[in-house]
Image 1 (tube, one colour):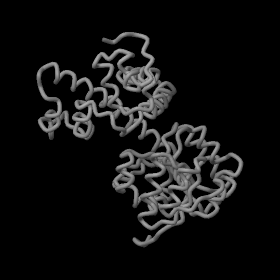
Image 2 (cartoon, one colour; image 1 turned 90 degrees about the vertical axis):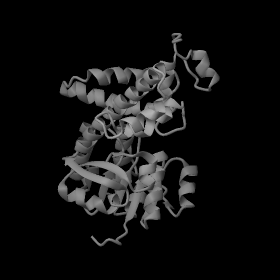
Image 3 (cartoon, rainbow, N blue to C red; image 1 turned 135 degrees about the horizontal axis):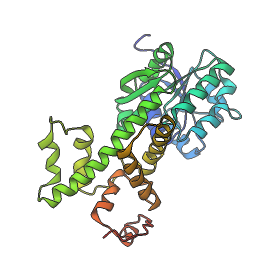
Image 4 (cartoon, rainbow, N blue to C red; image 1 turned 180 degrees about the vertical axis):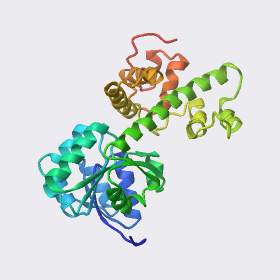
Length: 313
């Protein structure tokens, strides 16, 4: 593969992550064709140099690679196998790269079906690193698929990822993403509790990351989020409801494999409570509300549309 090689890439899904992925691919010289149901999002990407397609089939027909950035396995299935979907334009010369975060078993099933029906291979490439990682080409991507297809996908991944690792057959990337989300969710809760403990002890919580740097308790989440949580900085970095979606998939997988996850179970229910309170679209830092003892009325005044049934103060 020549270092200056640029590909024709279809990207299906122009949400927050999809837009970042598309922007990065355009900036690195690829020819990108976009399909999304939201015409305004597509128009904004056209202004950056993307080409708009009238259907998924049209986007895939014009491309060597098809990147999916979608929210749920049901949406992925509909986009791939539905009317005028990926399968309608699929062939062995094309490669599907699914950067969504969905169920590992469903991923393996869809990958097997797509290859059997069309000859088109599938690599699951869920990601970690968010919008900043995508825009800077610094994503961590955990992949599932054959070694040959993993290498084929590198044409696209080399401009998106700083860490691109093959974890096993189809679905293995999605399993690894569930493990990534387990760490993130549990550590977010640990950071929130550490903030409260520091405050109760008269220690400035924003000083903790530097004090613990290099020790066993150090982590990127500690370094990136403790000061944010301490400042009650609720600017968006990741949605609570998106984390819950992944945690629900994690629990379903654990149930299927009879894997005990007691600590994760508690954190899942905390996220479920926050979503029930209307905070699903909000940033993970909003979990500080539970530890701060805010009442439902406090959150309503903040615009949280909260429906806590109990007074936590």
